[in-house]
Structures are given as structure tokens and as C-alpha cells.
Image (tube, rainbow, N blue to C red; front, side):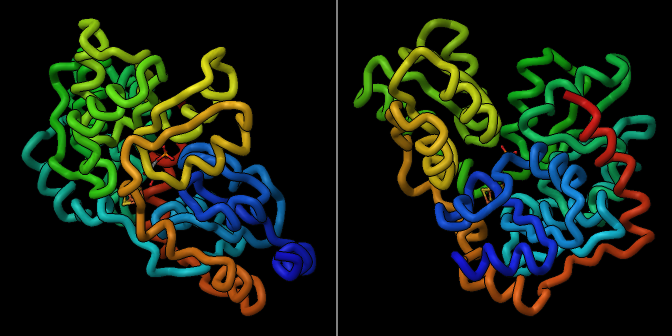
Length: 308
Ligand code: 13P
Ligand code: SF4
């Protein structure tokens, strides 16, 4: 850890980490946050190098927003199952089937896919992005179906088509998982990530009073901000378990219970302190997005940064 901190200074680097990273990476980072916070922060620091501790699509987004800086990722194989559910060609075909529609893509997509989008969004501003679009315009929302259905329910937007993609970690968090957790921890607040396979069900049950827990559907940083301010002391957490470290660090007097200890993203865990050290020592692995792709993807990403 000392070597990482010393090299970071020497190399004029900043370390950004997602809330799902292992605790040691979170502790050494200059900033820990959700996808939107990380994209915004990447632009705020003026360091020569950005070492991105997260998955590849996040580092690509930082590279697109910071073409004059070196963006490094400690392991370029850190992928994402959701990203793999759609290609740029799929988006082109889908758009051709719906002329005049606006394509809104979750940030969990490749740079090539983003180049086909009109707007990018993250879980923390997806509702605001959709609400910013003319209500008479058809929307193609991709790639996460659980996030898409939740946004459709919250906004009441009928003219929204949703791609049938999912993240294997969040899709496995089912309504039964939530019901069992509430049963075991009566009185606890429930924090649910909108990518979860239960998010629309939770929204519906909580609006009809059938869910016996105060429920909040939030992005990862949304959960942390909520828990810090809440007067309550126990929270059921429905997302990837890496967030528990950040929750416990930021709200040390409160209790956090994962609804599923199996909710582990193996891609996020591919970033280790050894690989982070090697990345700083050897200036590797540089994330390069071809100019032609970056140019086309930038507008959708900049719209995402500006909204919400
Ligand atoms: P947020 O950090 O934007 O909530 O996204 C969660 C996620 O799964 C990113 O991979
Ligand atoms: Fe992708 Fe899911 Fe892992 Fe997030 S948690 S990086 S969406 S596989």
C-alpha cells in the first residue's frame, strides 16, 4: 500500500475506484463512487494519469472524456456480463426497426455501442434522462431490462422499448431473496439497486404497502448517501457485496446486512493491489478508444454527465 501511494505521487496519478472494488483498493483510492460519480470525477482531477479500478467499460468512458490523459486499468480483462448482452450492430438494427426513436443506453456498454446512442445514463440518473426526452418520442432503452422496467414504471412512459439484457449478479437477486431477508430482519430499511431482478416487484409491493420494509431503489452511491443521512440504524442491502465496505466506512455506527452473500461480481474482483501496483510501476494497461468511436460516443456521455 505504501508503494502504491508513493508511486501515485511520483507518477502524478489519481486512483479512482468503484464501490464494488475490494476493500484494499477502496482504501487506497483518491475517490470511490458509482458509475456517474466516477465519470464526473475523472474530469475533475488534473493528474497526468487516471488509474481506473473498476471494469473496462468504465475506464473506456473515462478515456473518452479525457483524450489528453493516460487512462490505465490494472486488468484489461475485467469485463461485465451486462455489457456483453448487446453489440453496436444490435443497436443499429434496433434503431432501423424504429425510425425516429431515441436510443438511451446504460453506461454499462462498450464504447462501440455508446457510439450508436443518443443518450447514456447510469442508475442514478436514468429516470432524469428519460424525463428529459420529449414525451412523444419513442425510446429504445438498453441493455438492462430490470433497470429499464423500473424506469418505465417510475416515469409511466408507455413509448419505451426495453432490451432484454441483464447483469448476472443483480438478476440473481429475486423477490424471494428479498422476502426472506425482510422476514429475518424486521424493521430494517431495504436498499435495492435498480439492476436487481426484483426492483420492479419491490417498487410495486412497496407502493401497495405489501412490502414490510421501508424501501429505497438507489444507485450504489445513492445507497451510501441515504444510509449516512438516515435516522434508521439497520439496512438490508440488495446489490453487489463490495459496497458493504464503503457503507461501513461512511456510516460506521449502522448495521448493513447483504440480502445475498452470493452477490459477488467476479469481474470487479479481478482488480487486486498487486495488479494496481504493477499498473503504476509499468504504466499499464493503457485504455485506448479509437478517435472515430470516441468522437461519436462523447455526445451521449456528455449528456449523461450533464443530467441529474
Ligand atoms: P452504479 O455504481 O452506477 O450504481 O452501477 C452498478 C453497477 O453494477 C456497475 O457495474
Ligand atoms: Fe457488470 Fe454486473 Fe459486474 Fe456491474 S455487477 S460490472 S453490471 S457484471
